[in-house]
Length: 129
Image 1 (cartoon, rainbow, N blue to C red):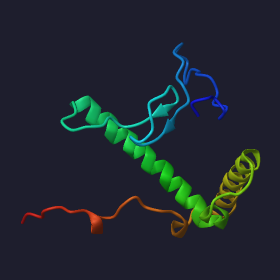
Image 2 (cartoon, rainbow, N blue to C red):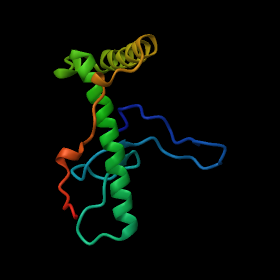
Image 3 (tube, rainbow, N blue to C red):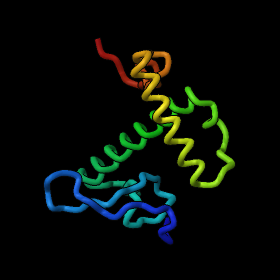
């Protein structure tokens, strides 16, 4: 990624504003910061703004992981590493996304194919009467 081999598109506007925003990959603190990599702020005693940023980034990452989990649940090919070149891997991912969307339009949404991030059973909260 650091040498530009991923082919990430250049920054572009996301609305009618004249501001260009870079395409990014969301990662964790292990990776170094770069123009196309977002990671949470590290350390303790972070400012409110940094805590909010970390929370929102975490939510985005969980959403992405949930989407991949839904794809992997439906298409078993994602249960193991794709041992193909990068162009074939990209095609496999695109085709699975297209097939997933086609099946959802054709058959409708089913709750057994979705995943939840959490339930009330795993929330540690004190109850007050």
